[in-house]
Amino acid sequence: MATTTPPPDAVKPDDDATTWRATGRGGDAIFLGLSRLAAFTIMLALAGVGVFLFLEGFDAFSLEPEAYAEGGGATTFLGYVGPLVFGTALAAVVALIIAVPLAIGIALFISHYAPKRLAGPIAYVMDLLAAVPSVVYGLWGGSALAGALKPVIIWLGDHLNWLPFFSADKVAVNGRTMLTAGIVLAVMILPIIAAICREVFSRTPRLHEEAALALGATRWEMIRYAVFPYSRSGVVSAVMLGLGRALGETMAVAMVLPSTFVVTLSLIGESSPRTIAANIASNYKESTPQTQSLLIATGLVLFAFTFAVNFLARYIAGRNDRKLAR
Image (cartoon, rainbow, N blue to C red):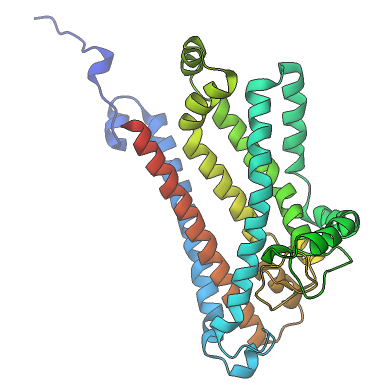
């Protein structure tokens, strides 16, 4: 009795490496093992960083009140780290408000409006901006941008001082303000957000776009009803990735912003909130063991804050994907 060979689709791949080897897929099993090793390595590295920060900074939670005196007269760890968290969040939010609309506009222009001979060079230049070191951005922001923003800052203080963001007891006439730092951060995260949004927009099914245009939609209506819904989760992920970069930026902010331990919404005052990363970079080299533990503890807070932001981004992106799947 003749034997018949089952069709290729009769052998269904699964996650068991032994089954893959039995069906002659040893290469797939090796790739699966390497992929799992890489994933577990990343998780172990993340856990190792968290454990290190916790062990090295644990003593900072129970220091004498005098140890927190530098933090604007704080007497507890929360009083010390609170203004730092506020300054970090404020600088990142200002950067996002400036960068996100520009990044989405640039990404849409490259993917749907610009001719190919123009879209390529623009995308290349945007990608190059991501390779510029943060020290260069800090030098540019502290010297060129701060000087250029002096008349703008003075005008905002004179005409829009009824807004809390532009109200200050003393306007920083040297241009080194939270607004300047936010613009520098916006330029730094702009290429990251724009590059991801560009790729997401270009992945929109061509059939969806042509169907919208065939129904009489304008170019903008096609983007609004076909491109944006399809790419919403990717845009959210791009924004959160840029936010993570802005939260952890150190040198550029430290070189631009002469900060203090204050909590204020003013973006143009001489006294600006200090960020966690800039505070660590400014004080770590000359710190005592006690102060070093305190700085590491603030690094743990930044680590947890950034982790929470990324977790929130994954949740939002996953929720949008589930809505589209329905």
